[in-house]
Length: 249
Image 1 (cartoon, rainbow, N blue to C red):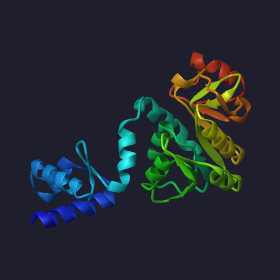
Image 2: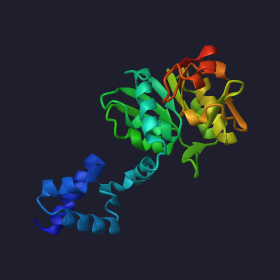
Image 3: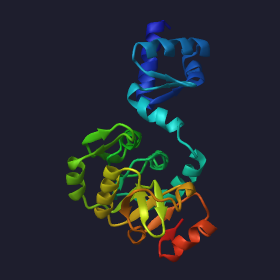
Image 4: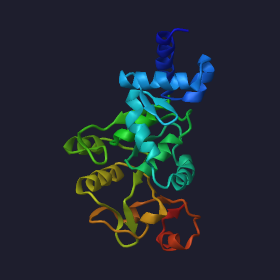
């Protein structure tokens, strides 16, 4: 097979699968792994794909891939994701905020799930494109470059018109007295708006953020229906939260 034909095939595979493995490509195309690595290097330089460790991703998925591999406490967040999945059922309308815990959560959603998901996180929206039966609605606006979420009046206007069954809100910190708080004023306001538009509020939070307070209030503990952490529900750190009437998983 000519190099040009092989590289066209690689582009087709990357577009379909979003991410490819060097060794797997070598087997499928019956060439050496070194040949594939050279192809991927050339194609990366030509802007046809993005080379990453062990393979390549489609250029449109570059943003998601780099943030995925940089996730801290990934194993803990996988535990949280598996606990939270049953809350999102077929036919539901949901709102999901940004953050790496929520990113791991949406990546773990079943591929056959049928739902409508609104998000103001660019990373979450990109990840949801991997789910064929989920209708994804990106809530646009001015992009905050640090967190890659949209902010501003457009977000509030759209959120005010949504009546969601459930929302999954990330948290920078949570305390018994002040509930969820955030480091950014605008993000805190948008999270508050998504909570106001939802029938049920599920907070996905790693245990290192328990009993941490930031400057801007999102919602009191009384507005949270479920807190999901990687800890066992009877863990000492969670007992006071459970006593406040919040479901703990």
